[in-house]
Amino acid sequence: MKKRPLKILLIDDAPNVEEAIEQKLLAIGIECSIETHIPKRRNEAFGGCKLPKGNEFDKIDLALVDLELFPIEDFVELSPNDLRGGTEILPYLREEAPWLPVVAYSQHFAKIVNRFLPIACGFGFDGYLPRGLFYDKTLSQDDWNLICSRAHLLRKRAALGDQFDISRSRDVKIEMHPADKKLLDAQLLQWQKVIGDTFYFSDKVVLKRLSGGWSGAFVFQAYAKQDHSLGGKEGQWLLKISDSPTKLHRELTAHFRMMRSGVDYARMAQPLWPVVVCESGCAAIAFQFAHGTEEAVSILSKCATQCDDVMDRIGSVLMGFYGKPHLSRDIVMNLSARWGSSTEVIQKAADILESGGTEQLLRAIVQTKQEYGLGETIEFSQSVIHGDLHLGNIMLGERDILIDFSRSNPGPIAVDLARLAVDIVVRIPEVRGNDLPLLSGDHSSNIAKAIKKMSSSLKLTSGDELLYDVFLKVLLARHLTYADNRVSQETKAWITSKLKSVK
Image 1 (spheres, rainbow, N blue to C red):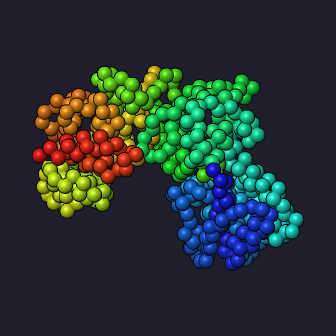
Image 2 (image 1 turned 45 degrees about the vertical axis):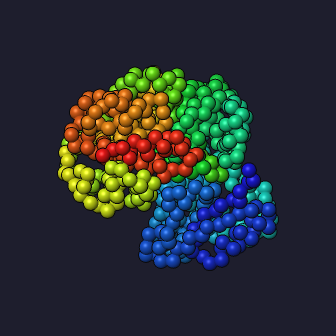
Image 3 (image 1 turned 30 degrees about the vertical axis):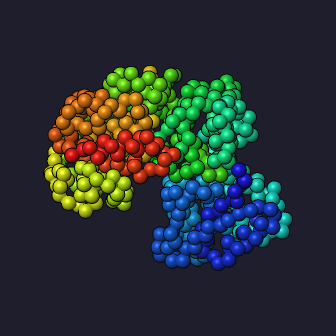
């Protein structure tokens, strides 16, 4: 892959700064693109400028922040409003994109450096530059690369500890299947650097690719052989690599939120590092696992006859995760709108089905009609649910645990169970049986029997069963809208046949 240009986030109230920085960096051989945000109103938060958020941070490599934002009026009595790059902008960037190196610059670092720089350093930027640097004829490519590498080193040490050494991480040996290496080479430029940084305490990392979920991240089982001179964290890990640092940041943030909320520690994995490890748009997070841990999807794929045992273990994990659910009341249509797919996707799925009971249900949802049970007020079991429950997020081993809580929120347990049932019938054809795994009516499907067993253990209500059946149909129909490389034609044909046969 060709190395991409350096993407800089620039926050400065002065005009023409972007042009000066870009021209100087190009002149010394640094290809770059600059996204500029200009504060204009002193009396508003962030100076009235709209800052990036969420996925907008994915392709940003470095932030340059004017420390003052607006001219300082009184150097004797400096106030927080005088240094808003440090009091407002930096905290926001640390919360939204903690992996991002942030460098402050100011004209005052050169003018009153003895007094001003110690104050500025208290904010915790990853570098400090005089504004005149970009007009300095002596600035070289080596100088700029040193500034950037130093900022990246400080940011990583904030997450990985003072022992982290960039040169050390480059020496970590990585072993994996050649096909997986080829795939990563084609899609993620800095993947080897990121893995080396993540496991910098190791001599060697052995990777085995896992199936993962639908998020687009590459998921690996990683065994890290420890360098004993660093004294650390040898063992087995689940490693996620992605071109979206934001997605992994959300997952890690949600994981810590769940831990703080009091979820049974035995149901969760321990993160290796508290923040995302990132380099040029390639990011990684890792969780520690007991020896022999495997994805539930891997176990079922290898031996479908273990379905009953696997489902029993999953049921045990879920009962521990949900704790003591409480009963809530709402209209099925409201719950469908809150937890289901978008109306555009549902409409597209209905058009694909063309006819049948499920097609009519989908159109009723789109048109908000009170039919097919959608208008019923039901009593349902609510708890903090996983929100993205599938076989790739369930890890079975010496400790059976869940991972990826990025979509966790209080909600109906029936939604989680429907997602799980759909994932099983889509991914594991051998255990589908001849019927949809509905909870209402006949339970001839092995999956339906297992879900029914879970629902009995969780003491779910008849309202839960209705909600489960609605979501099962909606989620299965959604798979018909996916590309063929995501859901096979054979699976789509099975789904279509079963959904059309439902009354």
